[in-house]
Length: 270
Image (tube, rainbow, N blue to C red; front, side, top):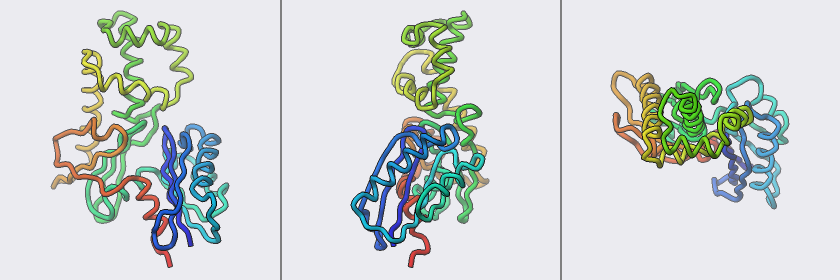
């Protein structure tokens, strides 16, 4: 028996293959894998990552768990599982992130990368909020921060606020008003997220404002999840540590979402 775990989101996907003892014998990676925003491309990337992880390994029986952005929306998860030639369980990426970060223990996980989602695990029960995607949410995420830069630049262009050096440079790069509008119409979450580093690393006043807005959204989400006796918070994802708040005790992650997916795949193994 072999076991495969896969973690996929707006920036890319990674797969890992283990034998029945849990030893890692294969790894693979590919491009973005949000099955709600672009199912066909995501499915292609997921298959590529799985095939790379399984390359050169003779497999008779395989059980897989895929933790994917967008798996909670519509029937995309069921459709993807039907395309794969092995026993597959597709779950939301927050489920595998929580399992990887906390194991079976209690705590709160703030997963902040291209998108964002927040979850509390107590007594083995997971309650999550967020994960709505950039059109409806993803507050505090890289994509949200990048889009906030675009929105702030647009307001500055209209005269609602000062055009700071950061906003001036961004508007110039987008080739002004028409270019910004054109970019906004075609941009994916990953495209917007590419602008987050310049906001997070800038001392521009507009950058401070956007960062403060992001942290306020993150604080509100975690406050909503906290029980009467506060739980420690584990900060994960590409931007988790950068945007971590000191309002609550922090707890290091035991592992990542890929570890969580593999652990779930191996549950109940014989």
